[in-house]
Length: 142
Image (tube, rainbow, N blue to C red; front, side, top):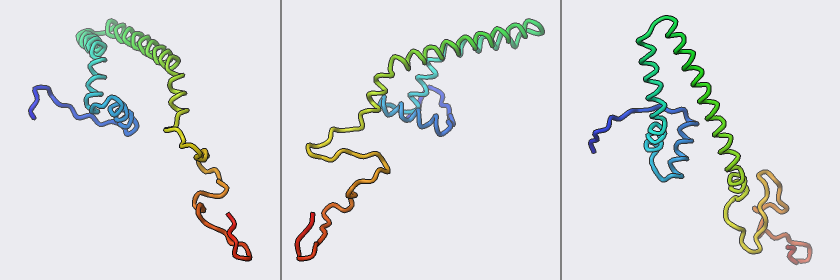
């Protein structure tokens, strides 16, 4: 289906691709939609950066150095604010994350044995269920 919007191919590192994929699954949308939303959210900041870079390309000498220093300072401030925002979001959602990590699925059936951590030995191991031992005299030991 033809589109009026230009298309862009993006190569992501595996970890970032997996993160975008998980977000897309949670939001029930495509990875390209997630990337487009992220870029649309960043559009005002991108416009400002491009305007500053255009201005820097047209100036020379000391003004260019001053503009570069100002851009670096503004970037540092923006990164600090983003870090503060992420810390606040982490603090606000920590209870939800802890609860979600504590819940490991559905409730056990009545009378079911509790699950054991991976690698823990069971006595008897589940593979021996139904195996019967015979004692001398023909009686079964359970």
